[in-house]
Length: 360
Image 1: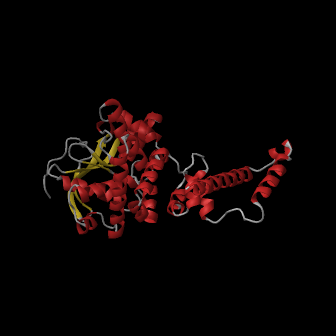
Image 2: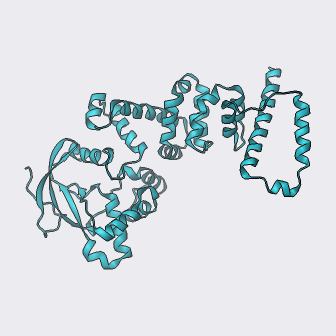
């Protein structure tokens, strides 16, 4: 094994042991032992907190402090810090964190934050938990070795909380575009991801880069891409060809993503069909909050039957509605009111579209 010097960050007792571990098919030497929690700092460059880091840099012109990282991660429900803290309170830290020789956290930010949380709220546990089991890379570890650790810990399926989808895709994309990696190289590095999954990540990130370039507020655009990566992925899978062949459609989609027009991914899924339907497209371009759902009803074929004289039928319905008592209106279910609002929106939009067609 290379480099027999014990890293200074490790406790002298129990005596650290030089061990060989495998990360992403590569054998690496490192020191197994314990580190005092006070010597550890959250990794400000950790891509798991990329959005938070950007906010700090934009607001304060610096990287977040250890306390700021701690408070941020504690407040992120998706990271399940409090659940992990409960496990550590009962069982201790069972999986060692991983540091480089300088003490930079490569893996274990959640375990570090959760342990700190336990100690702060249960001071009596400090003697037991203040020394965290750790595995430290040797001083001669290369940047490639460190990268393999990150890949193993954030792309391989296991019990861990992996990086967010956007960060995983961005990492692959940067390797492909900035570092010139070929698909075979990417597949080897990010196994067990299949070639098709890697290609999809790259294509989705291409679309997101167009979205980012289209916007003037870079930080807000990054937040949208970060939080709604799967919506861009759905757009790529369902109607990417339409977006690329229809600049107006792509511009409108980007604008709506930035404005927060969609409530869920189902609405994004139907957008290609809506674009192909003149009536639905006229409806969705309105400012009504329910315009997307109304447009979906159109493409699903849920239209009013055209029986008899439309003018007379509408007036008859209006008269019937006017006859409703206050008590009858109050008893209407929310779903019924919602269906009525959507139906009226459809009729108004269709009427406007018909008038515009006549003028044209």
